[in-house]
Length: 183
Length: 418
Image 1 (tube, each protein chain N blue to C red):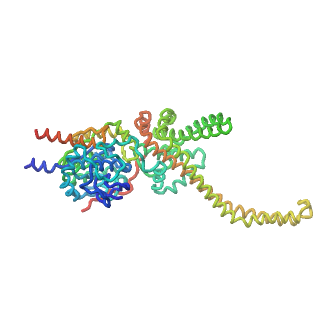
Image 2: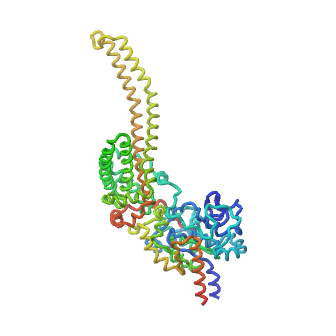
Image 3: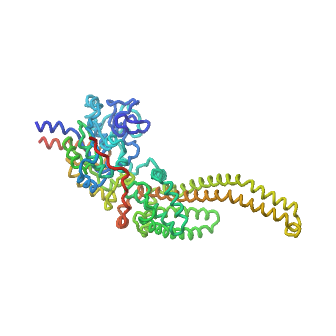
């Protein structure tokens, strides 16, 4: 019974990864391929709080924003949905635990060099650095990758591939995982 | 065109939302007919990325340690109802999509091709707004920017002390490369503003000397040489701007003299850098000139009577005292004319003085505003095209020796609803 309920509950796919890796873009295409719905958590937060993310950071501060994000993650209740999280979702253990309960967490992995190419406007994206020792994309990458790897059930390298190919790799990886679990 | 599902604004011509993949209302697309290629094409044609907020781990740790009652709790969000219709009709789409071979027959035209494999994202993104436009927005959105700009303009009048103005602009501009988007700092003095202004003074002195020598040499050739001298000056102004930003980010004078690194960054987008260097000055100069002309015209009208009096008095004097103005017999006429002339002059000064003072204040404001605009635009340019500087140890090793003070939160945290 627990296994059945576990199988029926975990019918979502949660995408985590660095900002700029393409969680939203790959998620949209993935949703179309798998005939799932698509939800962007950042968009949810903005709709719920009626403010842009930058305004939320400005008014609540990074601490407050992380707490709001964690609350939103903990309240997610979907079926057959691709959930694209924000890059800072991993800072909320409760939120990540809930996501793991409702879906399969997929880490979209990319190298730092390619991230630099994809994200030259890194500073323009409004990434707020509260600490003086985390001032570059490399620092952020070094800080977050261990967290992504900790929460990931499936890791898919999406470096150097197109959006469609990345989505196909995700589907293939999930199928492999499913087959391994069954066997 | 706004997507009714997610609220994102889509470019005209899209039939599928780039954000959620749902068909847009008012188009011929439907949930059943939309193919994977159409979704990929819409995603490829999406506008530039919006800023996202990305706190760091230390902020996360502090957030978890605090009581969990500080923020509003979001209620459960259920999946949109459109999922039901797409599920029932999507079986064939799922299998075809997985193989990546869905045909896009009868699909509306998009910017991308209808091949099964979508092209990779371009390495250099396009920006919705230029550096100057972004800088303009940053200034306008800062509380009290008019008063602060005017104060900077007045400080600019004092030699040596006016280094603070450049330093202030440099410290604000450098924040963009460090990933901080904040309003104009309230603190003008302090925060290494004077020191950075001194850095700029040295940099500009050296580069001006080079420009002067090089321009003087090539300027010896008539016409072409003069044009070359102008080109050299403009180029070195561009170089100065980039070097100043590197100095500002590193908070170290020597960083700006790393010629090869600055040159490599300059090559990435010289067009934008050229615009930043010359356009604000030209536009602001034209505006200030027009305003000054209008003010002088109004003052001219105000003192026109006095000018007329002066002219008439000199004509009268010429007509009625033609022989030896200082002769003994004409003292009476001289005294009356002198007093009237003095009064007329006072009238002119009385009209001109406020006009000149107003023009002076406007010029101070405009000069400071131009400095702010150029530096902030340079901050955006550096963040976009010279972001590799943030991985350079020669920059990052000294960058935070004197960190900026953290901004004070403008509003208290949201209290949880009962």
